[in-house]
Length: 454
Image: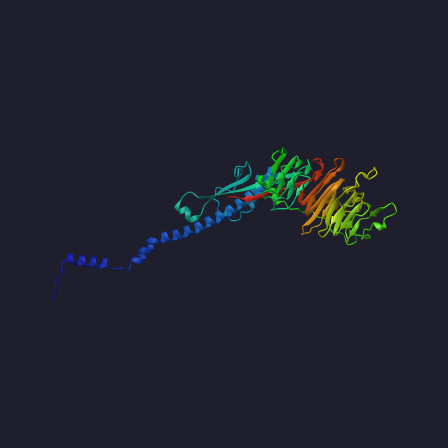
């Protein structure tokens, strides 16, 4: 028997069955979520492109700041630092400009001077921004996304410092010392490049007449309380690297006979000629050096009680050869004329070296050098001693030499001589005197420096 179901019950049953049906939900949910999924994926692609543009833009700004800072560090290009920075910025762009908004033609950085750590105009600041117009992000916003970067590079300009007494040893104290009772007269200045405390040590009871002392920092200069000269502080001198060394003898350099006063003529004056002296030179009688270059191994000892003279000469100390200068009793025995004292030496001029057959480049490098050591890594002790009134001119350049001055060592008649050494020690009771004008005094150029700071 059939049972008749009311119409309202049938509708309710259909609705109930429909509510338990799940066959179309996946399609419906996919249709609803698909735009969101596609948009999220597109937004992820846009985000990756933003980061790529930002990295390239930051790299370009960094390189621009560094280029501008180097231009300012070398003062001859200070008027073009902004152009240098802008060019370097453009040279480091490759992809970023492909994403520019349609109404922007190029990315132009802003370049200005900055003040780093209390300094004035001692850095270069570069800022730049780009409006990026990408397809998916445009759906979410009518305005392009703006990406901005900033970079700053500090610089320290190289400085020219002049001094006739210079020490080159780094990371050490006591590289330039004047002991108790010692005297140093050198108005042409003193430089020690070591940045260690006490790199320059001048005893309270020393007598000094030094117009200018250049040190790496305040702690590096231990000076008498009554010092009234100029103290110049420049940390960049600690980066100085010596590049001047004595030349090696040419293969065809002559090898004169070994020095031997027994071969001197009856008047007792021995004459030496330029060349290579494998056994060194140890003065034992009155000696004359002919003009030219003397390559000396082992030792160059000029301390004998004799009159020694050489005009237009250069001594090259090879393989760690030692130097001794001085004398004690031959003063005033020169007999007048050009020989004025016991030790009479002058270096070759540019013209002298050219006349001797050396090249223009060689003559420019070694003019006015009296003594110079080759590029040895061995520290060598050198001595200037005795009671001698030296008449020497020119530069004594001993990059690895520890020079000690004993006794009365001075230049006669206000002559200029200059010492560059690893260390210089004017011991108690010693007297070191040299006079050089600003035009004669040699320079030490501290190297400029640049570093990226943000």
